[in-house]
Image 1 (cartoon, rainbow, N blue to C red):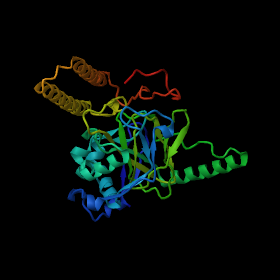
Image 2 (image 1 turned 135 degrees about the vertical axis):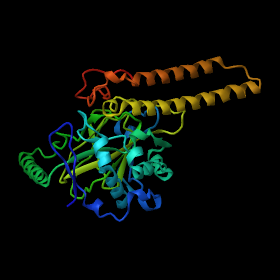
Image 3 (image 1 turned 120 degrees about the vertical axis):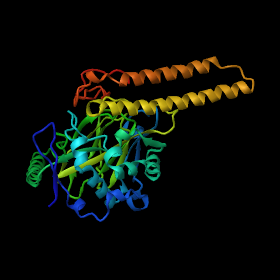
Length: 374
């Protein structure tokens, strides 16, 4: 059996991932992504609004989260797995933090061309945009297909399932069945995303998986769960504005998810991107460059649009609108101030240490105080 070991910097455990499917692949990832061959889109059965989970609409959208939907074919998933398990990726792009122990980040553009092309392809972007109800593009190349990795041995899986069965029987006998226990040790703890939207895609076989849902905290403090996707399926979430966590999965030896972050395509849309949860798990030079690049491109486009507005008005003899211009300038001042605030000086960023400022609701148990406005 082909396997691969991954050593986490946060634990002594060495997760082992089954590579049988990838070792018997008939398609070579280097042949490239082909939407006709690798996309198998089936629309989600339901899309939830922010009001459905008792939250106010964000400055961008009233969309909250989708039910899981089929996105990629099994062959596409095999190609993606083959790329993320390449030694070049596993050895050079691994990160860990107090929120999640094993992650791969910033590798796609440099070392995983199939994955990069899959998420940049117009057909894929059209699907994600359709589900979210707004035109979206990848946040930046560094945030294409962030990978969360979790693994255990067959022995650990069997012991865990036995514990679950015993606990379920005990709860039934004591009349307390249904009490939450799968979130005792979530894969990724409570957080909001740094970016407006995310698409979470499952890259593991979930046939015998128990749990593995995404938990959302509603506006009244209740916790609701969105069913975990099957292999090749995805969930779209407006994660910047909804507190959520990835719950543990039982009955399987691995759980591998791919998370690609998105932002609105139109430069006039608000961009509330923060770097709170990504600074400590990133190559800051690359992160800050790409963050600066796209934000300055947005500013450039906004200035071009404003210049056209005042020129067009002048050509037809209209009086200069001072109030409108000052409002535009104030908006761009705030845009630049926010950008400056998010780019914390390198020496003040603690590797792997993500604080609680990304949590904003009064129901956040871990909060020590109300965060500053982002």
